[in-house]
Each structure stands twice: as structure tokens, then as C-alpha cells.
Image: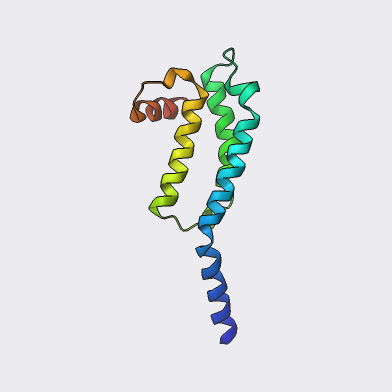
Length: 111
């Protein structure tokens, strides 16, 4: 019986550590995004739909690795959303001056 109690306590501790895990995933995804900046994001010869496809295939998996064990709070969701929008803004200067809803609508149509 004590074993089961210890297992539940350990599981609770793992779930409580989701905040630092999310921060670590954001840092790794930001590094991956930064490594592609000169070759992909800053290259005006590459089409936007190609950039978004690379973002979905290469950056989002780095960001969301292990997310099924996260307990998300508003602050975590806000951090993830800010990272996502910052990446979408960085992919194309054509987003400048557009509203958030228009950017997400375009992103969904391409992705």
C-alpha cells in the first residue's frame, strides 16, 4: 500500500515540474528556430508555405516533445502562444501590421 502512495506522490511531482519542462522546451525550440534563421527565415527566395511547412515539421515537434505529460496553466499556454506568434511573425515580414486573427487564419490555410 505504501508503494502505491509513493508512486502517486512521484507522479504528482513529475506533473508539477511541467513549468520548468515547458521553459526548457521553449529554449530548445527557440535554438532550433534560430539555427534556421539565416538559411530559411531570412531568405526571401523561399516561399512562405515552404517556411511554414518547415516550422511545422522541424520546430513544433521540438517544442511539443513530451507535452502529453504537461499540466498546463494559463501562464504556460500564454508562453507557448507567444513563442508560436513570435515565430510566425519572424517567418515573414508581410505579417507586419496584420492582426493576430488574420495571421492565424493564413497559417491554418497553408499548414
